[in-house]
Image (cartoon, rainbow, N blue to C red; front, top):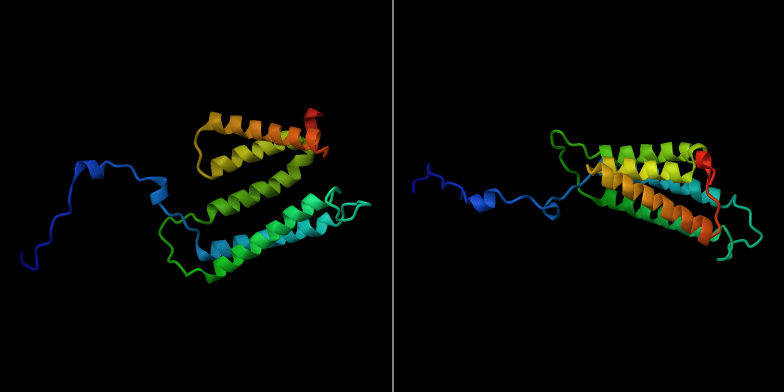
Amino acid sequence: MSTDERPEPATDPAVADEPVRTADVEVEASRTVRIVAAVVLIVLSGTFLVGVFDIRSPDGLDPQGPRFFPLLVTAAWLVLSVAYLVEGLRSPRTTKQPGDRAWFEPVAVSALLILYAFLVVPLGYMIATALLFFAIARVLGSRNTVRDAVVAVALAVVVYVAFTRFLDISLPEGVLGL
């Protein structure tokens, strides 16, 4: 074989038609997007953490009191957000590919969460949460409308019942008046 000749790539029809598995594809947000998302998460979790201390309870931080679980969740959220920021800062810079939309999902999910915060009281927990779950599934790439709607409603109802009936936590009733 001379230096001008290059071997032809193998054209095995079985390999060429094999679908790409999701596990084979690594989706990575750009470094800047991860850092910005981490900072937004830190600000949100810090805000909610401050809000936890506005919950009035004679029990203080007693695990039986109403302040304990929100404190636990928001503290964990803050720790994970800081860890995500550190990971983003330590990651290598990547070159941007043409048509790169790595920014879209975090921005869209953040916008949906902000919209949810404004709609949860007037619409009620169940309706706002079902809409949120459905919309996030769509943003993250799901295209099965019926399944997404059924799962969103089922999750919203299960969480609502668990919180209101078993944990005795009131959630916004909204237009349904439950």
